[in-house]
Image (cartoon, rainbow, N blue to C red; front, side, top):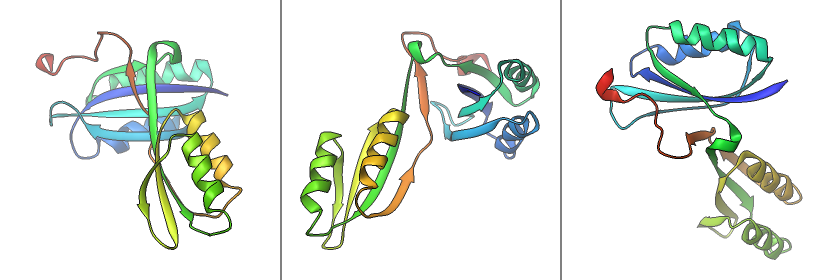
Length: 168
């Protein structure tokens, strides 16, 4: 299976997310990451979807998405021409035996301490999916209390932008 990353500009209305994600389900794509937010205008939302599937099915999916009345525009991201990032909050046990190792590992990944108590340390790290995966894998050697991870957000490099709101 191939992994794809697409941003879909939609009208900011009730039920749009369900209609869009239903397209992925019907085409049997596995959504691995989903992020939704308002854009530079409150009339539009941006849905960023990272998903896995076959190339032939992907073309059909994109054609069907374009036919949805709430979809304004879409952009598939080429990893070479885009910037993608996600955010991780991870709460680690603050044990005297492993504290220095946990702090050293976090420093190596440039994770920022955002909460420190007698019993736990919360780190924040932003970056590519592989970097986040590697950090979590390293922390598995210690006691992870909680993990909270956002979906991928992506923008194309350079001056091009998705369809301007003024033309909607």
